Amino acid sequence: MLLTPEVLAILILNLLFGLFGAVAFVLSFRIFLKWDADATTPLQYSLEKQSFLAATIIKYIFSVKVPLFAFFIFTLDKISGVITGAMCAAGVVDATQSGMYLIALKIINLYLFASWLKLHSIDMSDKNQPYTKLKFGLFLAFFLSLLLELILDFRMFQDIEIDKMVSCCGSIYSSSSTSALSTLFKIDSSLLLLAFYGNYFLILLFFFLKKKYLFSMLNTLFLPVSLVSLILFFGTYIYELPSHRCPFCFLQSDYYYVGYFLYTALFLGTFHGMIIGFMPKVASGYKISLLFNSLYVILLTLYVLFYYIKNGVLL
Image 1 (cartoon, rainbow, N blue to C red):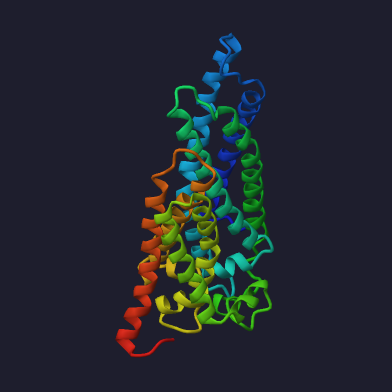
Image 2 (cartoon, helix red, strand yellow):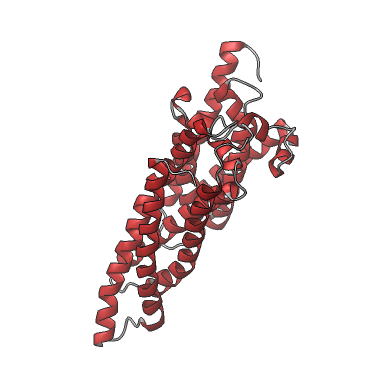
């Protein structure tokens, strides 16, 4: 196992997540089974106190997981320097069989825990706390997803072999790659841009029409469309190199860490848009979603525009 200070920090925090999460899981299971908002028994009073403890633990886990996800990517980028053939985090992810699944699961868990916190906020704003049983029931499922993530974290760092040759991002994200991602590179750029901008303008349309289910569905679709568009088209303008399509390199200082802003804007925009369709009292999500989705689209468009102004051609 590769044990750098950064990896040790991640594994220690994961251990804490597992321990505290297990406590919250036990409390949530008890609350889910025995919660009765109309009861005035000692048991209900005890459950109300336990609900505050469980919610505090869950909020702690999410508040640390958000910066830890960025630190995780930073760690992968840093240890790429000691792995033969790796040029950035992409090579480290590709070095193990669980790497890509782990990244996907981490993203899913960010959305799940953010949804839980939003539901908790809505529940606490109502004196009757109508969603208490629901939110702790959901956490029972979310904890299993978190537990799987922690196991894959350990498995990934355990499987990394320093002396084993891995692929660089240039070969992983190319049409000659034999990975499942290679099929994406056959998508025509005009079709990709039509899907990207068409999706965004439909979001804009249903923002004004206030069709919450369609708005939510389009935001859910916008996430994968945006990521694919970023890798295949817009990323090449950030790098100013048509053959460079790595989703990790623009997280580096060479590109002014713009990737962190792009991914944060995409997360905030799509998350607030998604929850519109299935969560009550989130009307403000319309504006927040449109704001961050628009920032994402405008910034990527400006990269293409500035490149064309500077060079007189498109990639």
